[in-house]
Length: 230
Ligand SMILES: C[S@@+](CC[C@H](N)C(=O)[O-])C[C@H]1O[C@@H](n2cnc3c(N)ncnc32)[C@H](O)[C@@H]1O
Image (tube, rainbow, N blue to C red; front, side):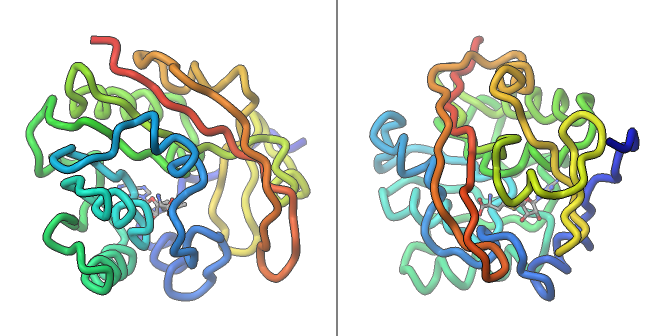
């Protein structure tokens, strides 16, 4: 195991993933995240709910929420991702309810504080390389949530067959040679700690077969719901 901390993916790294490498299944997939459909009846997706999709990518989850009548704020710092999200929301006939912002979620957000019923956090925290960034991220989420608000999250597990085959760096980190993006793979016990300040309501591992770069792998993902503690 090498004891180095890889650098965190930048906006340009993500632009290259969307424009050139297209190595991550969620880059090209149009179906919503499995964690989202798994929990969709527990999180009360319905008209009027305010949903914040952090790192919305191509918009697959934002569109699913908007199709349930939710008012969605979709944020991503990759202009290629936000253009695709806008185009797909138009194609799905939900662009009136998908408000797309090309910016970092660490900059001032367009909706007021304590305004969100639900925050979507799909495959975001696994790209933070330091606990300090994760803390800042969770603090931002707690600021945006209503007191009754929830976060639905998907994180990569260290049992995931595609990422487990890569040379391990320290603390469950790997760098994908297909797009040079670094990931942190989680052990189940680490998940609640990564969301310190939020309360775990559900946590389960989802396992499924999926194709990555033309090959079949057994994927393993932690799907969670967190509630605001305040
Ligand atoms: C693995 S993709 C997940 C996309 C989407 N959540 C999904 O499940 O399809 C991670 C996304 O987070 C975005 N991202 C990473 N850091 C960000 C930041 N600081 N602000 C906004 N977007 C960010 C990337 O551009 C990328 O689109």
